[in-house]
Length: 332
Ligand code: FO1
Image 1: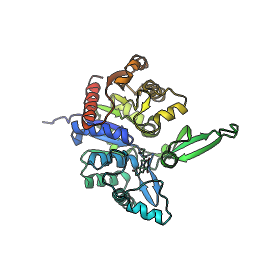
Image 2 (image 1 turned 180 degrees about the vertical axis):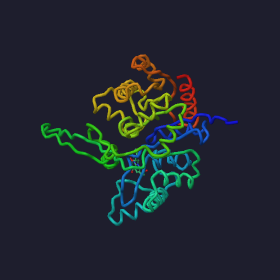
Image 3 (image 1 turned 120 degrees about the vertical axis):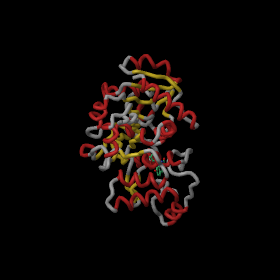
Image 4 (image 1 turned 30 degrees about the vertical axis):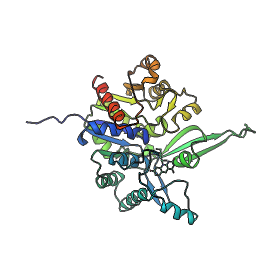
């Protein structure tokens, strides 16, 4: 008697916003029914360490180690390492807590021993007691660069364009420069990670785009060669949750980026961007109750739509949104 394994779900996530929904999904789905694919475009080498922020936010969130205030790093943190680094005149703009440092050191060491990022992530998951499968989008190097334009207030003719490494834009420069476009260096030669491919080949019941930044968290994942074809081949509905609620991003620079890219900073603007970028790959869009008035315009893009509370503060909100998503997916 062969019991057909119930189909699983695939969640594509960046950092904070995505991790909240992933925690909700993890309350409802057993480990064998959920694979979380993390954006690795934010990754960078710093102080000789390989740092993978979105992977760590997801692992820490599922392990219960995360710092809910910042959305990154660990709770109960101490900062002696950073204080020591400051005394030596080292770079302290990227804040590394003492407990967080252990993760970066172990990851850097395991990678240096020749393991793939997927293998290292699996090891860290076990050591953190994370049961659900969190995988990098790829084991190949992909680095997000933010191409910005600094319009000098006085002399507007002297537009200075710069190409910033993601963490320089996001942390060192506090997302202040005006974005013009993004580059994902290395992506043309990147392959989806083994866990990502396996989850697609296992014909998931649905693929969920978490409420992450469309440009620097979602686009890197969907633009890895083979991913869009892989999603299409699953015949599973691809559903996005809007990261913009009431004209604001819950966290991070998504709304500011949309303004600088000339897009309406609304859930409709996000839906339009996804449809323009991915055509009919996307079949469903979930928007917040505050944006209910946009539902018909979003549906007119050819998307099935669903309205619910997408602002997640407590665990109940996360679980409710996850349940709503699974129910919505089942109806597509
Ligand atoms: N984000 C900040 O805004 N300031 C920081 O000092 C900072 C340190 C940091 C350390 C480890 C880590 O995994 C993430 C960290 N982040 C910090 C977040 C990081 O910039 C991520 O790329 C964002 O979370 C966007 O996904």
